[in-house]
Amino acid sequence: MSQYHPLSLDEAVALAQSIPGHFREDAELSVREIGDGNLNLVFHVTDEADGKGLIIKQALPYAKVVGESWPLSLDRARIEREALQIQHAYAPDLVPAVYSYDDELAITVMEDLSDHTIMRKGLIEGQEYPLFAKHIGRFMASTLFYTSDLGMNQQEKKLRVAQFINPDLCKITEDLIFEDPYRDSPNNNFSEDIRQDAEALWHDDELRLEIALLREKFLTHAEALLHGDLHTGSIFATPDSTKVIDPEFAYYGPMGFDIGAVIANLLLNYAAQPGWSLSLEELQARRGRLLQMVESVWRHFESNFRELWNRDVVDVTARTAGYQDMYVQKILRDTIGFAGAKMIRRIVGLSHVADIDTIEDAALQRQAKQAALQIGTALVRRGRFASSIEEIAAIAKQAAKEEQVTL
Ligand code: SR1
Ligand code: MG
Image (cartoon, rainbow, N blue to C red):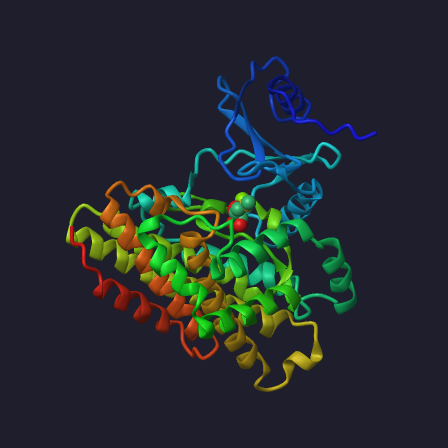
């Protein structure tokens, strides 16, 4: 019979104390359950006298955000832990170390990152992250390249695909990102003041065709081991350091889905900025930085990815002249399309972002939602035909130009 049960606080302390060499034997440990995500319990165990800590993450057998009526496989804890270990191997400075795990209890014990801040919170507060684009570009290039047919043996890759079959979590993405926002679904969650904008999505056949094509890629293009949920709430950051957490949505999918997630979340913050900036100068400065980050994320990804390809590609056919350029262009187009889809879902779909939903002024909040929808829909339409990352900034600036509410 399964030993699975949600850990009590005392059990979390006992487990933390059992990790060899981490805490002093006579340490007085404190524990808090700090999980504020949609799906899991997260225990933060600390020895305050020594300044040491660790994190115990435990999957629940259902989606916490909805309740027990939405069951979810506990195997996602194994998937998350194995993805963390692989990503840590390729980018050790950008991913927390795993200290221990128990697959039956769906537990992963990992490095404490409480000296970092969740990046979404930092961006809302106007924090600058000058090294973020460089870090995340390298993270995505190395994890995506080395887990793809370009960077690993193709037969071993097929076994990896099987190792990361993640049906429950993929279904969340398939429904919440690619299906619900484009029909009158009971899962949708939008404010009445944007009903007209939401309903317009349900009747926009051109947009829905692009979404169907993106969904097909998500369903069928097993290019690389994705993080699968790479938004700014899955990133801990300081101005000097970046740590990517929470890859429970990991599976083999199209590379542009991860890059698009990062860019979408920078642009959601861009759309939200009139609700957070205190002056026009601050608004322009923050938005300027965000658009620079968007371009820089792509440029760091691209240059790292090409460098790895030129140095370490294992597939001889991939050295065919012209192939690398076509491959990179495909990733760029996917990135732009997926970024758009990921913006739209955060306005109309079940799960939203604090950047927008915690804006207090109702008119500014509504404007932010409309700007995000305008940028998101334009990106989805542009994706398949794009030829440069600069097209994103042009789209975002156009939305800003059309804003009505001033500071
Ligand atoms: C029911 S889970 C809702 C969302 O939270 C996660 O972070 C994913 O983005 C998912 O779509
Ligand atoms: Mg998460």
